[in-house]
Length: 190
Image (cartoon, rainbow, N blue to C red; front, side, top):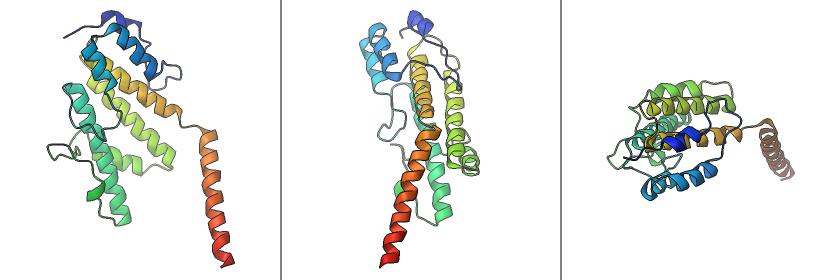
């Protein structure tokens, strides 16, 4: 297995609170320059959410997909129970039939997120749980492909976190509010 001492040593240190970091695209460009072609291909195939990816030759990535799938399925089950909905059609099931809800305390993480006071706080709790899982997966990996996979996933967590800002949230709220009031106005005219 290849070791990427120079590449890893040149990467900025990431923390969950990091506001400045390289983009995932820039990271992939660096990897294309320093990694083997097969390792670069693995990195380009890494997905943040395991919607269509079922398995990978990289154990760390399989663990991530199982965790994230389980977390999403636990959320689906909780939301479905609150709404009285049959959730089976919304679950993401792995090739082996597993939902992933047995991994990493995802059911408790989902319950805690659902108990938060706002959707933003719930999303922040889920993102923090994802980061913590990536920290666990990174343990023991220093200069190998697995380290690079985890680094890429951490960049994607940070990129997603950056999208949550007051201005965008207020804009979406105002657009939604306007649509709802227009709907009420149309109903009252009938």
